[in-house]
Image (cartoon, rainbow, N blue to C red):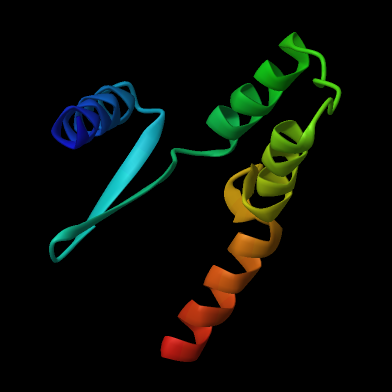
Length: 94
């Protein structure tokens, strides 16, 4: 199962990079992906209006909402508590 997930991730990444929606920077054995630009970020944000916010109706859903607050994309950058923590860690490590 894990192998299939990894293959799917690679295939999705290739499609998104090939379509110009995402950029990829290779650094050693790691690859870092980011939204290709402001226009793509705006388009992704616009997709959010297609659905209504789901009301929290239980513990599991409330945890999902909390996870979104912890790590989310805002325009063209990672936001939330995770984004802030990653930025702080990157600044500390140089």
